[in-house]
Structures are given as C-alpha cells and as structure tokens.
Amino acid sequence: MLTPKFEVQQDDHHLMIKIFAAYAQVTDVEVNIDSETFTFYSSPYYLRLTFSGKLIDSEQEKHNVKYDPDRGVFIIKCQKETPSQHFTNLDMLTTLLAPQGAVGVNKPLIEVIDGKNEESGDEDDCTNSDWSYYQTLPEENIVTEGHKYGFGNTFSGVFAALQDELKGVVDILDPDNKRFSQRREERLACELETFDEDHYLADYFEVETAQQCVEFIPEFYCLTSDEVKLSEKDQEDMLRLPNKEHLLDKGAKSIVYLGLVDILYAWSYNHRVTLGENCVESAWNISKISATLSWLESFTQLKHVAVSCVSRSLIYPLIRNWHLAMEVLRDTVQLLSLGHKQVLKCLLEIQRIFNSSEPRYLLNQLYITEYCVWIQKVQDNKLMSLADSLRKVKLEKDDVGLELHELEAAAHMVLEEESSLSPEDNINTVAAGLAEMTIIENGAAILGEDNQDAVDGNVTQNSESLSHISDSDSSSSSESDSDDESDDETDSSDSSDDSSEDDDSEKDDSSSDSSDLDSDDDTLSESGDA
Image 1 (cartoon, rainbow, N blue to C red):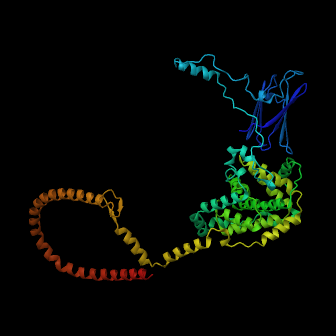
Image 2 (image 1 turned 45 degrees about the vertical axis):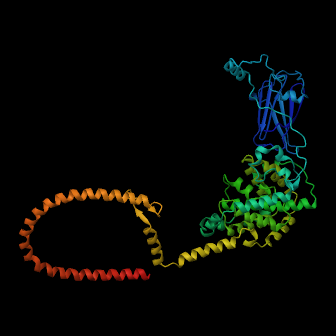
Image 3 (image 1 turned 135 degrees about the horizontal axis):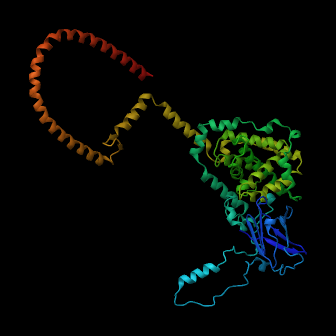
C-alpha cells in the first residue's frame, strides 16, 4: 500500500484533510474516524493520522467526502468533538503519521544476558507490540529515466510506486525503465511463445462455437450516427469525468488515434463472444487483447495495429478463429464510422468494467478516463477518415507471423492420409494393435515386451493351478468311466434303431445350414467391398 500526500487545515468547528491520490479507485473509498484517529483507504492508498484532539466518530456521519477529478484530490471535512478546540502540530506530517501514543523509538530498560525467563519476555513483547501498518511519506522523483506510457505517453513513474498492482494490470515487467522498442520486442517474443497450435486447430476444425459468434449481429449495425443515444448511466459517468483539455503534438495525436483502434477492437471482440452481454471475463478479454493496455504499446502504423489485434485474438482468448477475428475488425470500422458518440459509449462501458475489476481500474487512470474526456472534442470526420483507412487494410494469414497457412496445410495432410485408408487397412491397424496386447488374470491389458516377464509369471501360475485341477479330475473320471460303459451298452441298441431317421434329418439340416452360410458370405463380401 502507498501513503499518499496530504494536507490538514482547521477552523473552529472542522478539520479539512486533503489527500492527493491520483490513482485511487474512486468507487471504493473507506473513511473511518475513531476519536483522535483518522484512517483513509482507497486501493492502492492507505493513510492513518493521529491528532491531538478528538473528532466526532464516523458512525454519526458528521463528516463529508468530496473528490476533485481534475486534480485527483479527496477533500474530507471532519467535525471536531469540542468546537473551538485548537489542534496542534497539523503541519508536522511525520508526527501525524505516527501511531497513537508513539513518541519515538522505545529502548529496552533492562537487557537480559543469560537468556532466563524468555517466555515471560515474549509475552510482554506481544502485549506491548504495535501491529499498525508502518507509514512513510512518498518519495519524489522515483523514476529518473522517465520512459513514458499511458494516454499520449503523458505518464511515467506510476508502476515504480505500484509494484504490487503491476502483475494484475499489465504483462510487461518494469515498464518505467524500458523503451518503446524494448516493450515491442518482448511483446512479440511473448506472443510467439504463448501461441497454442493445438488450440488454434481445434477452433479451426470445430467451428460450431465460433460460428455462433460470427453470425451474431451487434446492435450498432442498425444505427446511424444521428440515432446513437447516450444512456442515463452514460450521462452519470460523464458527470464524474474531469474537465480538462489535452495538448498533444502531432506524434502524440497519431499514437492516441491508433491506440483508440486497438482498444475498440478489444471491446468489439468481447462484445461478439459474449453476444452483447458482458461477463466476469470481459475485463480480462479487453485488457489482454489490447496491446496498448496490456503492454503499454505505442503504435505508429495502422497496419501494425490490425496485425497486433488479430494475432492476439488468435493467441489469448477462449475462442481463436480467423473468421471471427475478421468480423471483429469489421465491427471496429463500423464503430469509428458512427462517430464520437458511439465511441464514447464503448469507452464508458470499458471504464465501468475496469472499475469493477481490481486492480484494472489503474488502466482507467492511465488510458480510458483520458480517452473519455478527449473523444468528446474529436470531430466525426476524423474518425470516419480513420475508419476508411482501417477498411482498406487487407490482412492475410501470413501477416500475423504465426505460420497459420503451414499449420493448416499440415493438419489437412494428416486428415487426408487418415481418410485415404480403406476399411480393411483400418481393421488391420486395430488388429495389429490387439495382437500386441496380452490379457492377464485381472483383465488388464499389457503392451510391449517390457511387461513380458509379468505375463510369463501369470501364465506359469495359471498352468500350475490347472495341473492340480487336472489331477483331481483324472481320479474322478476313472470312476465314472466304468459306470458309463454299462450305460453305453444298454443305449447302443436304441441308438441303432433311430440312426436311419437321423440321417435323413441331418441331410435336410445340412442343406439349410449351407444356404445360410452362403448368404452370410455374400453379406460379408458386400461389407468388405463397401
């Protein structure tokens, strides 16, 4: 957590505390007042102050909190418990940060040398320990190299102070000390390493899920620029935007326009795959597909933007399909052609999504909020010109650098080889596999020569058990044979009388059985020909 800059002033009835927290999550602010102690929390900032006098507790709701978005300042007005009481040392900031009752470093009065009574000493330490969060005033000029990022490359030093939040926001490490070229090289290398060929081919051949997204028609295709309306929620969010004007040079303007295309493509992808209904993965989809948001990229060419958008949509999200990527690119053109009001609606929606996804609200501070302010003053003809230029960008699969043509050709070759095999070849393949399997006593199958010893052991045990069974059966069979001989002599006379009748019936049965076999042979031959 960070300790923000702050100022404290007073009058006869109130304390006014100004907290400078430019990257705070405005929708998640906690203020607690307990007698002399005042605490403020809004991720990633935490502030605890201890005053010389008492304030009215926050439970009585006598305090007032205001936020100035232009300066990123919280102004908190707290009511004194005793009117006209003068609070001392309000300009001694380090003293205010000290926990209640702490006046300096506590030195031990007695130092134990022989190590006796260690348990009682530990208990005394725990009783007197202060578990409060240790605060220090923020340092100035943390970053010396000053590598820029954010809207129009106007920010620096943000992530040097927010290391804990860095991993959940962007993919690049230590962006404050990396040039644009270094970020781009690392991004491209990471994309090539992350690309999953099996996942891409699965979506390439199994098109049912992607087809649903491709056939989806977003609602903005049914609108004209004059028919675009801001919702009541959009208007409420606009009231919270800072009132500022961006002074950008020609190079910065180009970066801002190209970054807008990148962000709108990410929004369009999420809009299609969710069929217009945002989900818990929407914040991840948008931030991950946009290289501007995830790698703090600064594009200089429109085709590079299109290549990055399409390639990242084939690498990271759940559905990775070329036709879907092309449809999303067409959606981006449509959004730009509808003018600044439609673009503003998309940006405000992204802002709401990121605000509910900690710590991605930092991306609002760096990019989205600034874009929401800037886009309101952009002329529609500029956006339409950008849409026409994007429409003229023609992408092929070779452009994204993932060797998609080679991958698809190899997959088709494997399928053709499998389909060219005849049924007999397939049966022979299965039979060859079964021939390598040996069924053992417990019903499991063992493959290969490595397990032959186990098979031989089981066979030996089975043969020994069978020999014991055969010895016992031979003794019993010898006794039964004598009885059977007398029975056979008695039955021989009866069987001779019926032999003639049986011969006639057997001839009829054999003729019918042979006809049945002939029909079965015909059936087998037909199935084999098939």
